[in-house]
Image (cartoon, rainbow, N blue to C red):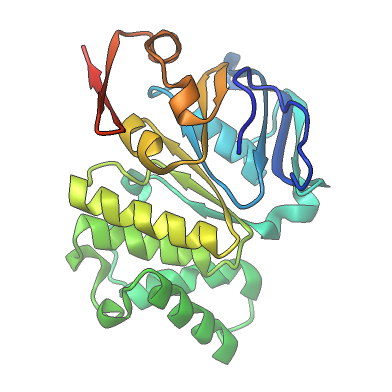
Amino acid sequence: MARVDTGQPGTKEEGFRPAIEVSDLWAGYDGRTALEGVTLTIEEGCLAGLVGPNGSGKSTLLRVILGLHRPQRGKVRLFGQKIDRARRLLGYMPQVELVDWGFPASAFDVVMMGRYGRLGLLRRPGRRDREVVWRSLEQVRMTDLSQRQIGELSAGQQRRVLIARTLAQEPRILLLDEPFTGLDAAAQHDLLDLFNEVRAAGKTLLVATHDLSCVAAAFDHAACLNRKIIAFGEPHAIFTEEILNATFQTHLLLVNVEGKTYVSYQ
């Protein structure tokens, strides 16, 4: 799906429709630059990875796309629209470290929180809102545990509930911040299967992660980010030792086993 490895949008193929367009984006905090001239285009209906080390600007880029952080310059378009006109097209899953797992809420309650942006301050959830929540729980196969307190769930189940909350926002684009963190290999595999199902339903996913093996195994394309775009394209084309070493600023060893790419930090 991706056609270039330079971070530039490239020539659009017939049928190509951009979901996210980022153009010459600069952003930072308190005088510190977090993003430098970031340009990339994410195609509609794909599973895209945003990879880079901690502090590389992944979360900042997601916050700018969400309209939660004002950039110094540059622009973001969602299906050709400005952020303030297209905000409802977005669903967001934060990093798990930002979630209070001790909060006394059931899985159903947490997913219902995804509806609050559409309800406003005074409206109570109605029949349709409950239907959307049940449908979202069904999509992530968590209906049987809908009344379980969120803190009692396993790490993989908690991740599924957060994704269901994102789906309950009825987005066309899902932004997911480090969803693989802390999961074992089996839970990561289940999450990848879920992402493929969501993509097959016509959604676009942009996943910020430092888990290169998951991206190499199942993603359509990836952007290597370290304040600026180091490379952008299909994982098998851009996950080279030279590009990854430049991105992570450390030596990485790539190992290919039966067509699968594994990354080892040296």
